[in-house]
Length: 108
Length: 115
Image (tube, rainbow over all chains, first blue to last red; front, side, top):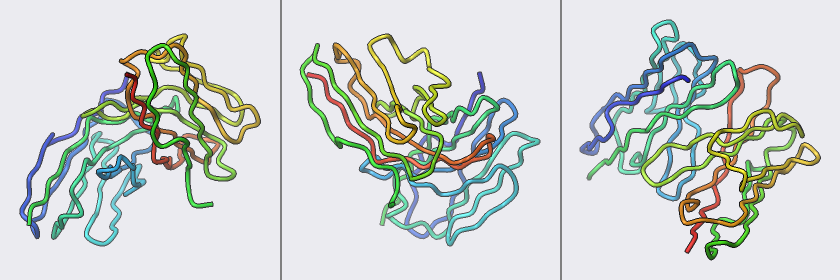
C-alpha cells in the first residue's frame, strides 16, 4: 500500500519563527489534506490541496503531485499553533491514509 | 449542522464488556469513515461506508468489531468482548462526493479506555 512520510517528526519553535513541514508519499494520490490535531484530539482541517498552492492567513501549503510531496508553511508561529500536524492522502481506493505526523511545540 | 458528531466522548469499560459508539455525519454526506488512533500515532483506517453500503474493511477490524450504517445517515461501531489493546481514540469522518476528490471532516472522537 501507499506509504506516507512526514518530516520532521518533532519541531520546537520560538514564537514568531517560521517553519516548513514536509509530506512525502510513495504513489499517486487523488487528493491530499493537512490537519492540525489540537490537544483535545480534534482534527481540524487546514487545507484540501490535491495540487497547487493555497494560503490561509499565516499558513500556506503547496502540493507537487507529480513529485509526490506536499509542504505546509507556518509563518510567525504562535503558541496556539502547537499540536500535531498530519498529512493525509486519498488513493484510488478512496481510503484516507495518514502520515505519522509532525509534533510542533511553539514556546513563548 | 455544525459538523460530525460522536457520542460518547469518553467511555471506560471493563475488559470483556461490549461497547457501542455512534457517529452522526454532516448532513447529506454520503461517505462515512471510522478510524482508530493510539497515543503518538496517526489515525489508522478501520472501515468506510458509501451511503448504507460498507465498502471496505481494514485487517485491523477483527471479528469482534462491527460497524453499521443502516439508513445511510448515522453509523455505529460496536466492539464485543473488549480487550485492553482496544483502548484508543475512535474517530469518525464524513465526506461528500462520488469520486475520490472529496474533503473529509472529522468528529471529536470517542476515547475508549478498557480496564
